[in-house]
Amino acid sequence: MAQKKLAIIATKGSLDWAYPPFILASTAAALDYEVQIFFTFYGLQLLKKKLDLKVTPLGNPGMPMPGGMERFMPVLLTALPFMQRIMTAMMKAKMKKKGVASIEDLRSLCQEAEVKLIACQMTVDLFDLNPSEFIDGVEFGGAATFFEFAGQSDICLYI
Image (cartoon, rainbow, N blue to C red; front, side, top):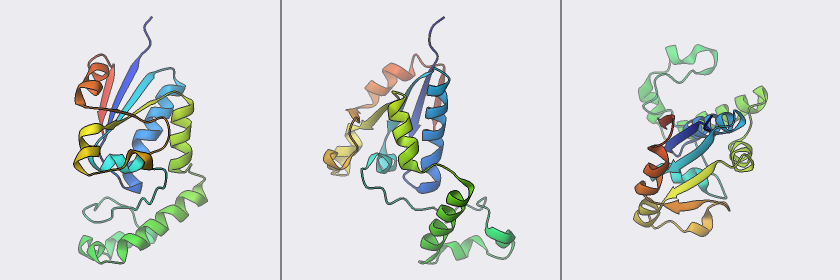
């Protein structure tokens, strides 16, 4: 029986959107899937050696607030300049309290499980990103590189 394949496109570079690709990839790898994640646009932030990820409360009305505050805090208030910092601190504290692995740990777990991490070369060039800022082991390629794998995958996810 052929090994199952999972292809993931990661396009978001915030703390709350960093978890899905790494959790799904590491889980699939543990289940013996061959896995590739194609990081493009803001998703490239997840490959940087030094992560400075923040939560994105703006435009995310489904984000639960402590103590049911979402009933009293309209989405408009999340646009205030200090809210991103507050929401990020609250999310990090909650994750630590609940024992949720860090993005760095999940990313390392993916690398140990031989998940292929591909940075979109076009986007690296578009945003003038320096590949030396990325973690070791990242491959660089274009959409054709990703399609070669994704076209044969059993599951393809866009995150």
